[in-house]
Amino acid sequence: MNFDFSDEQKQMRDEARKFLSEQCPPRAVREVLDGKAPYDKALWKGLAEMGFLGVAIPEKFGGAGAGHLELCVIAEEMGRALAPVPFSSTVYLAAEALLIAGSDAQKQKWLPRIASGDAIGTLALFEGKGNPSPKAIKLTANGGALNGVKKPVPDGAIADFAVVAARTGSAGRESDVSLFIVDLKAAGVEVKPLTNIDLTRGQAEIAFKDAKAEPLGAAGEGWGVITQVLDRAAVLTAFEQVGGADRALEMGRDYALDRIAFGRPIGSFQAVKHMLADMYVSATLARSNCYYGAWALSTNAGELPEAAAAARISATQAFQHCAKNNIQVHGGMGFTWEFDCHMYYRRANAVALGLGSLSYWEDALIDRMRKKNAA
Image (cartoon, rainbow, N blue to C red; front, side, top):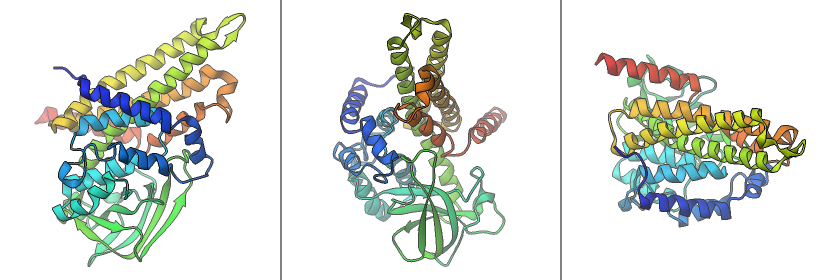
């Protein structure tokens, strides 16, 4: 079985890398990090014009109709560049939820706007500290109105709409959770930006007070949809993390070859060699898991739950490991604001919590493998 990408998909990767290297250099990331803008609007528009926002959206809904393998390729390059745009929240979460559970009318309303860059979406799932679970959802839905608070919501301060998980039963079971689409500019919605370790990936607290909501999917089936969305997003986010890990490794390698100490490059010292070798091993192992996840995602294979968890775990560990060791290779300079090392370290730690903690996915992998073996 060949898990590698096709020549056409590799060509798309090259195009994405060239585009992002030109339109998203480190200084563009720093402008958002410094608070000059909530996200890079010009880059967001450019991604839409390149067709990257709608690469996995069917043509009848305004997308390119390519598929999830192509989206994985784009995701990796977004991670390498630390693109300061609401790509993951809109494309991995909101768009996937619509593709899974949306009616034709809902898809026609939102997916073309996502593909064109005219709408930013997100998933409002978390309600404070903790990992995803039906019992953790306290926000209620009654008579088409939502009441409660969601936080942190990725890119919630700039999103136009949100897919909101709400409790429609009292027992806290999976069947008590339903999904709704909410216009975040409508009455009854109050948005408050939150501080995040990575300011290029905004978060928000969103309070709903009798906010009008449109059901997404059947009542009581929300948790099943959320599980599917999280698995898909886990694979796509893992590719972002591998892209970031590879770039952090490259930064460390290049600095080790250029930095001279005691008359020779620091890359010639055994301790630095070992550090870079460990970074390479972790990034390569993560990539193998990501490729397996990409195959499972693109074919909708029954192995997707296990593959998604494995990709998420290995890519999270690899990105954090490479981002941290990149700083170590740079030494004292690596801790300064002027060097770009901290931007990758920030992103690595922020993304590590976005879909649930590492321990959540480790437990999920063990539980899913047990169930599969028992079947």
